[in-house]
Image 1 (cartoon, rainbow, N blue to C red):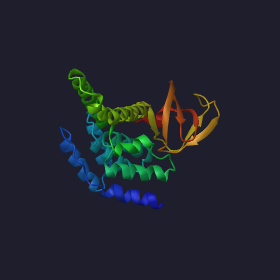
Image 2: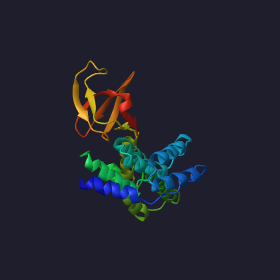
Image 3: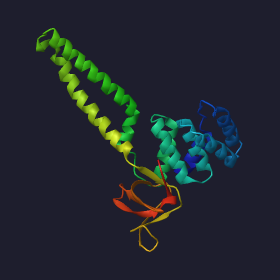
Image 4: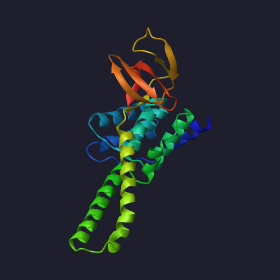
Length: 242
């Protein structure tokens, strides 16, 4: 309860983040409506910007804030998850999402998500590329000029292990981002053993629970909950992909 109250306070007082492009005017209008407590009107404007193709952490962050204050817990977590992918170091996004997930007793962010604070996937890719060019250049110059191994081995002794670490880090993070993560956006849903109402309920998932999309059938989605080692089928309207 205390965590939920803290989260409402944080969301209500979160500083607006700018959005560039043609949606900037509508974004400011939505922010003004949000501050006045006209949440449904603010949400409609934010969604209009999103429907026009705007992709920004600012928009996703404010969509999450608005959904939360409207009581749409699952949709709020969904939008904050999307915002975090675009701005992994943003303190407001991480704070709101962490408190929302802790209130659900959901799984903690993975190690690789946490390491985004150190280096984002894009930064890792650029750093890895620069390191490959640097080491390749050093080796090329050394071989071309026939330099003794002792003159340039220190660069390789340090650089090659670092290259391996960065490659593994980027590979694991890329794999995690490529997984079809989704969020339960409906109130507590029943997860069934098969794609149909005739199948028994195996377990339930709370609104806001993160899941993996495993397969699809008409009207149904098979989801997995890795933190609980469970899987089953749910109506496709009850979950949304991050």
